[in-house]
Length: 435
Image (cartoon, rainbow, N blue to C red; front, side):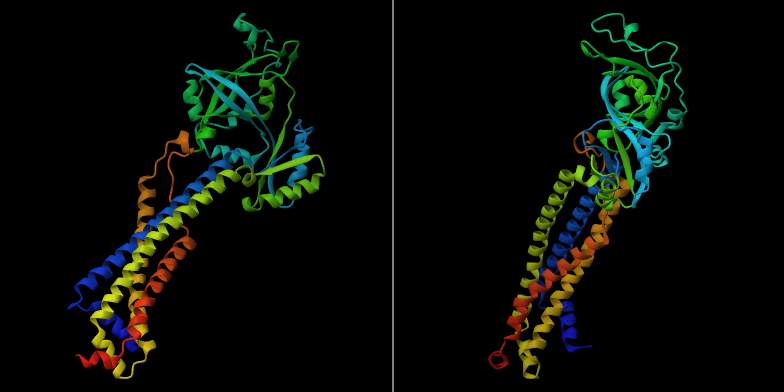
């Protein structure tokens, strides 16, 4: 064993004459451990919030959205989706549409966004199926309308309600409703019936006539993202047309990419394959302000907590300064025996490094334990109407944990340099003269 390491361990284990230094060293270990643990948990919380938002967003929206540049309806959307599926990097492509409406039930009325789902899209159906809490998605696509779509009246004013509804012979349209939206409308059970009110597609002299269609709850879903659960209603693409009173059409093509982080490249390939007249929007571009804000918050929190670790590491400087004062005679003897200043300096660098390593390792263990406990008992809860998520998991990533521990250790090493250099400058002759 090198004598530098031997002496560093002896100084750390010494029990006599070093009470203040021992307590200072313990404070340094505890301070660094707390700083590392706090930074590990903070980064894990930031990762969890970002990952959870990303996963929830991608459950309800496409990786890439394709639309006409003029915003019009797409002619023969299924054929276009077939062309898009042949583009490199595309996992699936399906026509869809988004229409605003009013969902009315026994409990009241609430705004809803009707999303049409193509029965041929296994990817979209699988994503929705994974969020169902009741009912079945198959009922939405097994539905066959009885009769035409002329059951809605264009009457305005306070006339008879039967003039603005579909025929009693028409079967209600099956829909899958978000749990929060269902609670607002009072449609909380599978089989409950309500009404969807839309602007209608039949233009008259007075404008667009309101249109009412009876619907039946075929299923309830909870995606975990409040914006979806409180506003979205799924129904088949053909039923959207029946509700609107128009021929089946689609305004966008939803594209699923094989690699979600290569969605911008996929969007570029799709535009090149289709030529001019088309526009694409990938999920990162659509949510860029949100993810940029999360990244800024992550950097700010990491910087603030790292300052705590730096302050704690300064205790190492104090500890080693006390050791140098207490061990001046020992240092002088080492110098008289032939120890070089570099070797004397290394003794105190090793001692500080051991303190820093102990604090960093303890902090990593404490931070990971805190993350596991928070996940196990769902300790991080949020108001969903404000933050979109009801709870946040903690996702400690190995690179973040390693970087945090290495940063704390590096700061600890820097804190040893000044007292170690002071020890190396001790002159044996001057010290031993008075011993």
